[in-house]
Image 1 (tube, rainbow, N blue to C red):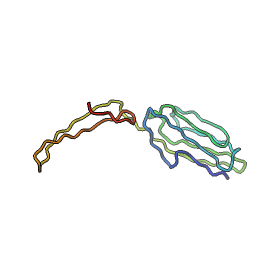
Image 2 (image 1 turned 30 degrees about the vertical axis):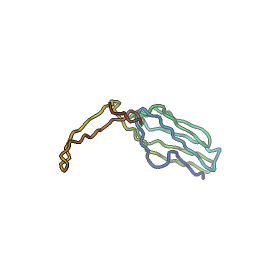
Image 3 (image 1 turned 60 degrees about the vertical axis):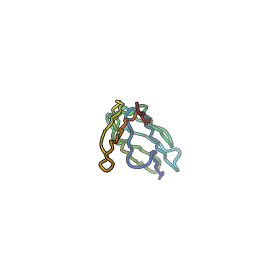
Image 4 (image 1 turned 90 degrees about the vertical axis):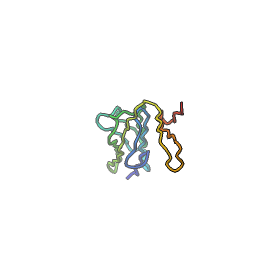
Amino acid sequence: MAVVVIKPEGPQHTVVTSESLTLECIAEGAPDARVVWVPPPGSSAREVEGRGSVTLHIDEVTPGDSGIFTCYIYTDVGQQEKTIQITGIYVNSTVGLLRILFADIKSRKKVTALAVWLSGNALVGDQ
């Protein structure tokens, strides 16, 4: 039997919608194994098939891509499968700043806290 490796590792993975997702399934020790990625119903991804190692890629993840992706490995000895749960988190693209004014009771000074939104992975600076 082949050792089945899925990347990213772990039983689940979270990705921000509109970002890309790459899943790799490798049949270690069985280079001629037939490898098939099957996305969940409703996903924008299509089934992908190959030999030994297969990569499934989604350019822009949508909430519909959330679900269980299954990798099937077929060899002369039999069939194996491994799954990964993908969760697409929707992030509102609105970017903004919020200032909160409060007082430090001991010093009796006003203190301003600043909350920021992110744009993608980049911090949006003070305006």
